[in-house]
Length: 263
Image 1 (cartoon, one colour):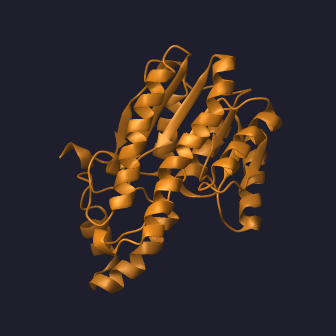
Image 2 (tube, one colour):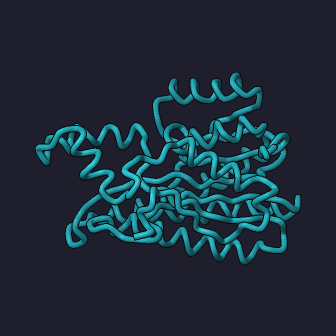
């Protein structure tokens, strides 16, 4: 059964590339108008925005909102409501990463990761919920991570933020349970994105490994399937969570990690 989002609007943060862009395009394919958001080259962003419109015959607008600033996040939700009349689906996907031993972890990096990976979701949900309640329908999806369930060394801020997202998801789900608004999080393992691909040459050099060794022995070490999750697989799961068949799925943390967190 396909998900029909015709006449609805989806806001997807961190959607100018990677997972977020795949989700935005997946929702557009189901008929939703889209608010995309993220940093990047202006011409590249405009190319993706116009491609969504031409490929799927929907409307798409771009919000340059900085996910570390609550006021700009509220403006992004307001842009969706002003442009299309509603924000029915919210996907909190924006995220950054930094790796360091905790005693050396730069304070400004900690604060940036907590702001962009966790607090941004709070601000966006806070702004979107009144409209969803008024209309009696909504879907909130937070991109978490396998690191919302397990930890890895040297990722204190990221792991803390993603565990926080899992808790925020449960709380929001309970508050909205009688309003026909669901809130769930998706926890991918390693996903094949341009960001991951760019890390490979540096890792090859740093560890004196071949490309295949980096992929299999470093990146995919934690994933029993020894395969990357694809952005389209994550997008398909997000789309399913917007369907009528998913109406009783709320407060869930759904792993899509090749078996990583089963161990």
